[in-house]
Image (cartoon, rainbow, N blue to C red; front, top):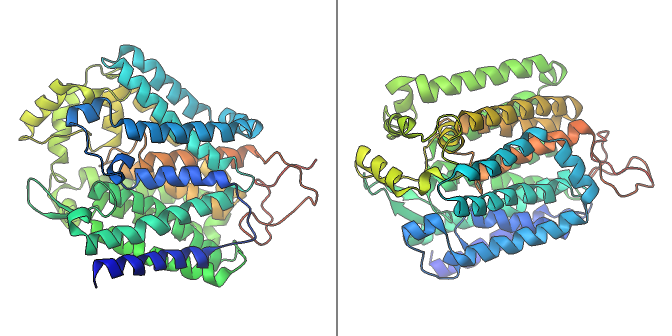
Length: 470
């Protein structure tokens, strides 16, 4: 097919998915487009790239980035802040219910004091706050479940089909080559195959959640069959894209998250949450053995070398390079040092790296053992509350558990606890959402009828999302 014709076909296909998935029974805020735009840019390429501007020098990009991108994210952050200012009561309630997350962000800010690059670190901390701000825009919506559902759909309906378009019809844009092995890599709209893998994986978990909810009739939109067809099509395209991207960590994490949602949909699991704990322990233990302790056979079974594509060598080199084992180099500061990057390049045969390929090691390098402890605190508290949310609303809680557990697994071989990174954003979203459910935080507009329609259509007995009575 001619690329020009393919553009039209794919554009019509995307429009068709939006049309089939429409739901007139839900009323979400127009502000939801702010986090959608945010994810579209993070899951593809910088705004400066789409405007045809030349990328900055590697060192300049590491320290300052592009001013065009900074302006774009600044506008989004200001707009989101204005939205949240009008939702003050819900925002305060959500933040007060997520103490561990706030403590972590405050320690990140405090760590700027011992960073060798305080100016850059403080700017990056502001960007990191943007992740939390955009999450709050979604979760403080009067219909948060519908808002999250639309966040998944609007983002995935664009990124997944057009990534396939780029890979197939624009290979000079949608593909690249590994500089060390010469192997062809599929990037799609994203900047790398790993970024394509992670944004596809986190969005597909949302599609699985939607499909299961539609099949169980927990979600009853105005056109359920059309919505199911749209979500099923998205899920099929996304799985194909995930296989094409060949990102093993994302593929395994998606498989584990999907398996958790399927398992927790069983009646036995919903009645016995102890079984959920046992299942999660098994998943994390098996994944840890497979990724970290399985040796050559496990790595080869996943299509990778015994060193996990060189990760074990990188880890062995990085651990002694931590500037301060207790508090690290300071927030987002470790990789800013040219000396560090040069030492690592010399030790790894010239590789120019900017991440540790392990989320826990990444936090250790940036924030030391204190940071690792705070991340563990966030994960444990988030998991505890996601299980409590599962008891209250099994369909919604199963998604939150899947994100938290798959996030734990993903960070074994990828640095996912990073600002403006899809895995971190959806992990935070799941943790904050769990706090909203468990704390019983509700919308602050009156509800004249008491019990009302499900936020994604239909009727429900779950009350955590309902507006308060006047």
